[in-house]
Amino acid sequence: MAASVALGRCAQFRAGHCLRFVRNTRPRQDGDRNLDGFRRNGQGVFSVPEQELLIPGCRNSVVVHLHDLNKISVLCGAADSYKLNAVNDESEILVIGGGAIGLATALALAADGRKVRVLEARAIGSGASHGNCGTITPSHAPPLAAPGMVLQAMRWMLTPGAPLYIKPRLDPTLWRWLLRFAARCNRKDWRASALGRAAILNDSRARLADWVQRHGLQCEFVEDGVDYVFRDPQNFERNVRECEQLREFDIPSEAIDGRTYLASEPALKEGVTGVIRFPGDARLRPDRYVAELARVVRARGGVIEEDCKVEAVRSDAGGARVLTSRGERRGREVVIALGAWSPRLTRSLGFHLPVQPGKGYSITYSRPSLVPKRPLSLRDRSVCVTAWDSGFRLGSTMEFSGYDTSLNETRLGMLEQAAREYLHEPVGATVEERWYGWRPMSSDDMPAIGRVPGQRNVWLAAGHGMLGISMSAATGQLMADLITGREPAIDPAPYSPSRFA
Ligand SMILES: Cc1cc2nc3c(=O)[nH]c(=O)nc-3n(C[C@H](O)[C@H](O)[C@H](O)COP(=O)(O)OP(=O)(O)OC[C@H]3O[C@@H](n4cnc5c(N)ncnc54)[C@H](O)[C@@H]3O)c2cc1C
Image (cartoon, rainbow, N blue to C red; front, side, top):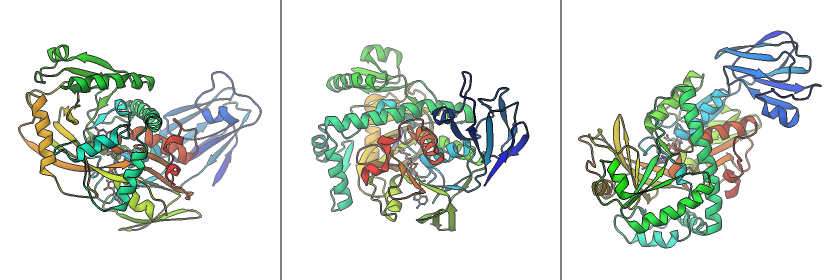
């Protein structure tokens, strides 16, 4: 529904309306702002996400005030060169999956004034987004699919306690995934993936800080960096060399020798040969982050349905029908954000998404009295240590054992064993949770963000692997940009699901 509003009049719109400005005569001038689309082609479309927007191009300027979530007034000055249309879009966007990716997408859409409904099979944040390590790491831009990784993985398969384990089994989907992964383990593809990962990680890192401030997210977010700690000098040297390439991707680092580091970090034992600090990294408490995303989505008028399992998606001319355990839901657009479960739903749409569950474990404790000042990546053991005011977590390991729901005691034991090697106080007094989660591992270690191939109204935001929390804010924004047809904040091409079609 579209309604024209004569300039110079005062009109009211509801949140979720989209205001479209069409240029009549006057060209853009210096000082005009907030309408990038306008600059591109003389015509801009945007919804009403801000408290106040200055609409450029009118001689005495046009000001839009957002009085509350439901009402805005458009006050027009002597704006002789623009025609103002309000396009009323009341239909809902359905987001399937209430993990960090689904909720970040819902938040970006809701902040844009769109009506959103999140459908979650269990409770929000009950998948991989719950017990992960909560580090925000542009430093992890290099993908797992690297030259030499195939040989390394084969060696690890024969090494008990190795950080990566592939359970041998006759599963054609797994073998197809492994072959695709192996084909990417070359210099050229490594670089392409690293560039794509760095772009989304850097955008996400900056956007997350903005979201925390703008939406008041209480999630123990701290921007102090992350330290990679080494006891093995050769591994340290190898990683220091890799930092040269990271600088190319705008990811700064600082190498610190073991002695100097230990002098300022009493939580660590002797034997550290070197540390690489990534000052641009950060951390948060992921379960709180997810709960806070949900709070903001609801505050912005979004609906979150828990215990609502989606069985199938059927697209039609006007959007899509979603069949759930609680009945049918309709959406103009549908976003599939099911993490490791995503291939199950996309398959019913004729699209085979190469994502495997990469199982990882964590143990959460009460906070020990002596904890490291920053999150640590214990590189020789591939174990992550994160301390928050509210607790302490050891996490890691990558196991390709399908959708296996058991807690492997050996793997959990490896976490504590690694922590004992490095830390004076490796565990807290009380174990609060022993957990596993399925990382959604795509075969090229890049997320799939964009339209599901062959579908007009069904979108995908999945396959974030080891970095879903780190990439969540950028993914949410990119998804909102693509759905609303706005100029995307980052180039979406590297993440397009069509690369797998
Ligand atoms: C041990 C470990 C440590 C990690 N550490 C970090 C870290 O430090 N930093 C980082 O950035 N990332 C980390 N990760 C990765 C990160 O946890 C994931 O990439 C991220 O959580 C994926 O988010 P998601 O929303 O895509 O998936 P999920 O969080 O798994 O969400 C998917 C949701 O879909 C729901 N669902 C499933 N099927 C259906 C259905 N049919 N209908 C409706 N809903 C359904 C599930 O219940 C779930 O809530 C770690 C992962 C692990 C396992």
